[in-house]
Length: 277
Ligand code: HEM
Ligand code: MG
Image (cartoon, rainbow, N blue to C red):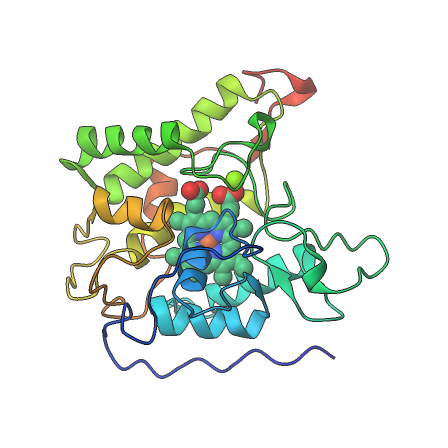
């Protein structure tokens, strides 16, 4: 049997997470990063193994320690746990208990027989998916690479709807835009389970967890992410100087609101045609 997940940590407030014990370090030859700026950052600061090959338990511990991703009040199941094991099942090696946070690697050990993929988080359409905030759709190539064109769109939406900041309104507008853009440009666009939920999820995770914890404005109360901090996480896998984790356990606050702002049904472009969702 695989090892059990670690128990939820007792929350003891915001704290400095960009501390002396967790310096940012540039990549060494062979280090792996992938499509998730949260995990990339945790790896580049040593909350996760810096080579990017990890166990589910390490992810859950790091997400809580470094970012404090925990269920918000009223949500009975830990979203970090669900995401971790969902990704592990489709992208990880269930025999060695190792997962690459990016591309396929021998470091996860010999592949078990099919249908196991063991391709790491870069694997398209099993967990990773289309309409990402700063990463191109698989159809256009380079899934894990930071895409500056997309980031510029995020900046533009933040200017138009958030006075230069990414907030809940921007999250809703930008998410809707990403979906419409992929419908209009990607003949293979797909936005079905689980991507349907992780797409909305990532839009609010950035707002929940990338804002310094000394600012305790809630997401619904107007919490906002500045673009310098956003770039630091999304492009550089780096906590801003002096970064403090969130001031109360959170993760998916705001998800319902951004879904409700522009309801879209799960679906895909049929017959390999654009504008055929
Ligand atoms: C994508 C944040 C934990 C797997 C993303 C994105 C954000 C994010 C903002 C969107 C990236 C973009 O499209 O530009 C976080 C934060 C985490 C966290 C703050 C807290 C520690 C996790 C966990 C997993 C995971 C636990 C699963 C093991 C992924 C994957 C993607 C992703 C596979 C790519 C999805 C896609 O855009 O196609 N994450 N994440 N993340 N995350 Fe995380
Ligand atoms: Mg993607």
